Length: 566
Figure 1: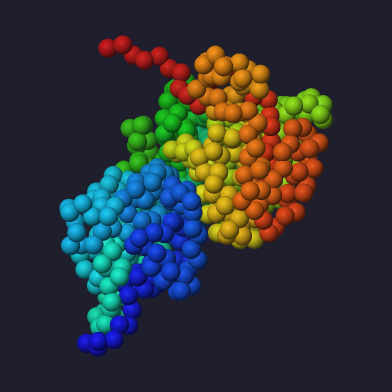
Figure 2: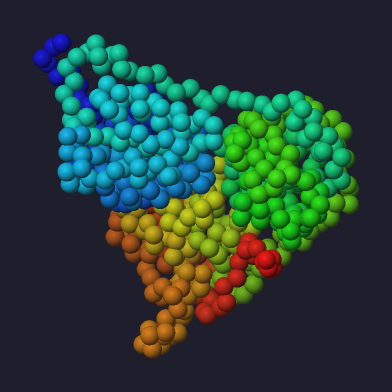
């Protein structure tokens, strides 16, 4: 054993992350993780320093979704971990691989009221597939490898690794011991396929269907199964319905895409193949009145615990999506969807698409904008192959009908958790993964407020994001200047109100980015033309639209069923 220090614990951590293929880390540094971040940068890993751990964790989670390997978030202990819990939950709900690494107090100071002390392993455990703390410096690479492997294998999700301060600062002198504790890169998750009996039942059920439907979820996008699913649709000529983040697995403009006839498709389908989609609130739990009372579900999922969830009569296919869809493609030789069913859906799509187009053309060029007119101008001025980030209640829901997606993993939204505040983190994470694509984040003013200061992060990191804030002065609906002033004076402001015409564009300029304030079609079109040409700076277009006033809040996705009386 030499007396010479050959590495620090921080360098051991950085080398382990490098071995695992990590190219970028999202986080906020402080005692004791500054040394970890610096060691990572020295090892060739990019570090994106955020202003809030919540956004950093969101960025890491979406990077994991896009890349197929765990995104990495680095935070300080105590409150830093608590702030990052939102990202862990978001990764858990969306089934995305994420590894959170956080500093903690020195091992001999546990339970003594140490600096930012918290039992972080237990705090993270409810949201993680694995939460651990190494017992020695030699165990660090093993624990990190286990966190990566667990995050990736089976149903993807979040994991946590605790980094004690004395391990980070530990002076390593024994090269033999250091070499012995190194680990290999976690290989891609092994793939499994359903048993032949289950597969035959699924094939027979699809062959017997008169009104079959494929529902393509974001699990299919994560699985990179777009080629297999496209081939299955082309062979069977069965209509398909993408979930919000399943858009683009097959292009939205495909003639069998029935997104614009969603309600009709759900109501009429008699056999439904769920491909990486869950029967949760987004799909109304598979229940009437949204679905037919006679509908039968075939559920393809990587997680056995998910199969049969909310519908005990579901036919289950447990396995990798790409491999299993390939099996179905080979076995389904004679499928005959009812011609009237398919043509009826196609016709309904045409009618609803036309209604959407017409809604965006109403009003004069100098009239105040609404969601539909604003989205039409934005769509007309966007280049092809952009990556969309969408959040905000009305902004996200209405916008989904306007912006077609033609490539998988090119639309990111609030997801299974309906998580507001993900926009800036997602945009930054997406730009890091897609350095040569235009990232366009279309967000509501309320949602943007959760993470607006990450504009400084984007500017400092030289990320040419385009952020379009749809500003209606409120959550769901806002008030006009006069209505707001009167209600403020009377103390009757609605709980959904935000300050009128807040200058989000000036926040961008204050941080070193570009900003535009627009109030009508002409101004929006001019700003869009200028903004899409900027490739070296973050830009914000602040789009003022009609505030909406004191409307009753209603949401189409909410179940409206009578509760039984027992």
